Picture (tube, rainbow, N blue to C red):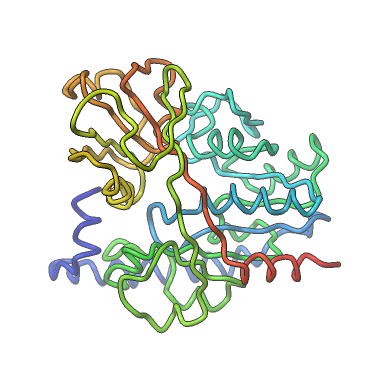
Length: 329
């Protein structure tokens, strides 16, 4: 997967051999949209879909967590639904909390439940997840983690998140490129949010707003000790061993450049379910640093040199005020 991702984002010429398959994919996607319609009946509460048009992570999870906090400040009771990608629950729908097993619920839903304190329900059938959420919890606004392409789910607001580093790759749809849908799909979204500064200008991003992801705290996975991210927070070692199993691991690795240590990096496939053996080759006398999403999968076997980086998403006022306006009755 990493091999083809590098090809997508480095405009490898051989990908044009897959162009006929991309055309077939687009036609099949169009037919599916024609037959599945534009969503089931309105659920009675506003639904905000936060998704993307590319394969891999773009920063949806921190945006959802920060948006939940903002909605709570407004006096609302948000709930979240998710497919539970990479999870393998015994049955669906599944109610998720901070203590749920990421192997069953998926890493992102567990992280969202832990950070937001909001009710979370996962189900590959998102309308069924929504019905369960409304049945079990008193929510008056629902956020869908991903789901732009899940047409059966009714939505009132669509937010597309774009990775500012990688943008749209070679601009081709799967499998020749990273796009789930053509770039023109952004025109139908209420908001396009750019995660970080854009690597280059693009016409599709003229009306986009930018959010900043800010690392704030280092948390020890074994003891729970918390230290400020800035400065020189470690008592041991002269290097950081950075591991990541996210859509764009380089973004996380780059965020560690401000630490006064040399950084050695190790990337795993997105949503990788860590095992103790994954860390055997690393130096036990040097700190291991990972994302929060990675950290929740390592608590059961954490060692004293394992830390995760807590982050905050700084959302633009234009996005927050725009959502507030659309939510008004």
